[in-house]
Amino acid sequence: MCVPPLPSSPPPSFTPLPCPSPPLAEASPSVFTNAVAVCVRIADHPPRPRGGK
Image 1 (cartoon, rainbow, N blue to C red):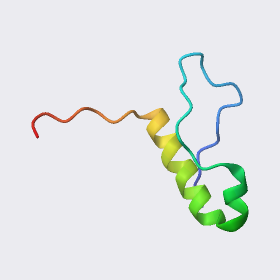
Image 2: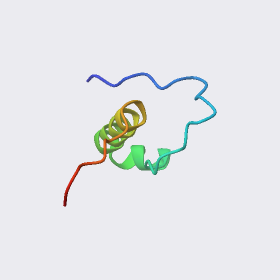
Image 3: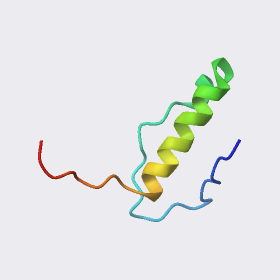
């Protein structure tokens, strides 16, 4: 499983994303891990606005 490590001290401009809370990890670890990975990817690479539609 490749999950990028979370920064120990996020930059001041970092805004918390709506990620699942830790308790959810107990119920479904894989879903929690995937959600965290997605949140980290979004934080590292913000989605670019698409032109049109």
